[in-house]
Length: 136
Image 1 (cartoon, helix red, strand yellow):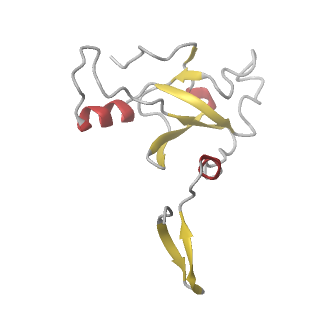
Image 2 (tube, helix red, strand yellow):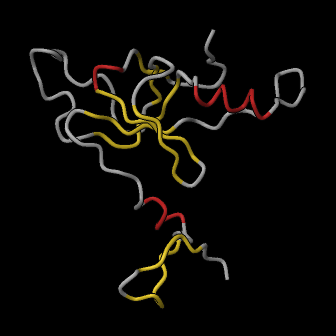
């Protein structure tokens, strides 16, 4: 059995709720950001330093939590609609790597992958290549 039981239905004890088993089904579990919010994924954190030394679990966790680079996954329906606040248009689009403050937004994990939901005005920049960028 490759499915993981995550609950049962009290009205039908024989029916079980299981985690999705395919990437397509997992992707459907991503929340839809509401209003002017942006759903972002945290890029994978390298498990070794440039020197080849393996990072500790605590170091990996800190780098994930304090990440400043995010991948824009979804945008809420009201992102960048206010022409007075955003006279030059949207600051980013889906698929962009963006820079934001380390503790921005709401943190959540889905299938061991960290995501953030941030406000549209939290975007501080767009980067072409996020590799090599780290928090100081």
